[in-house]
Amino acid sequence: MKNKVKSLIILSGLTTTVIHILNKINDSIYTIQNTLECSEYNYYEWRFGKIRYITKGEGSPLLLIHDLTIGSSLYEYHSIIDALSAKHKVYAIDLLGYGMSDKPYITYTNFLYVQLVIDFIKHIIGKKTDLIATGDSAQIAVMTCHNDPEAINKLIFINPQSLYESNLIPSKQTKLFKLMIETPIIGTFLYNLLISKTSMTNIFRQEYFYNLSNIKEQDILSYLEAAHYPDYSSKHIFASYISKYTNTNIIHALKEINHSMYIIGGQEEPDIDTTIENYTYYNTSIESVLIPYTKHLPHMEEPKETVLHMNIFLE
Image (tube, rainbow, N blue to C red):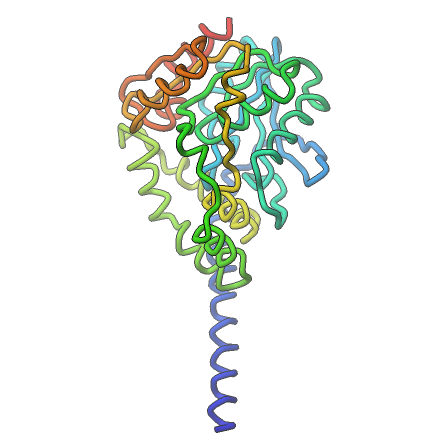
């Protein structure tokens, strides 16, 4: 009996060691190419960690906030920053937990990101700014504008999260999933299984792009690197996001905002017409446009046309 217990302990130890090594190898594979590196970035020393950002151009300030989906980062805007910087001083940030910003072991919430954006505008930009937000970050933009209306000028939402989705809250199942992902070694192993090159490629092909020929290998690699940089710490924002901790009900705020708002949707984005209809139901001043032959990331798939509509609205 003692020999069996001893063998089981040894086997468990070896299995844990092997999984730990596989986790390290997996992270190294996805981060070795340094696709997120650029010479122009700076860091904002925020109270919860360092926030990477880049700035380019001159003119009225414009803040770009990437989506909250796993692997998102300021890279999302790489195809339009130069064009936008011709008329604006553009700021693009990696939100806490994303890209090359710090990724502390905390529960990430909408309120946390609203405070980050307000503090960034106050301490780095220093004046009222226009703001562009993609997907799930639209609710961050709405709540930022509602909490500090003097910080924001105009708002642009790219394929904003539906109001139904933003109302979803953590359940027993999602809380259990969060707990599982955040466990050392085994949780990291599960995260690495879920966030692989195959899965990221499928996300780009099925959700992000309409024209598959527009997908670049660098796009997939950049998202993978952001999801694994610098190690397994990316799993904490993934756990909070999947478990709905980053959600909040924005309907009340949306009704009270008195700012100019504009929705840019991908024409092939599922249910985008319904989403726009729901947003305009609560705030009739919202304008919108659909970019043909695009899905969730029109600014990566059709950057020229997307920038054209952005400039028309911002001017």
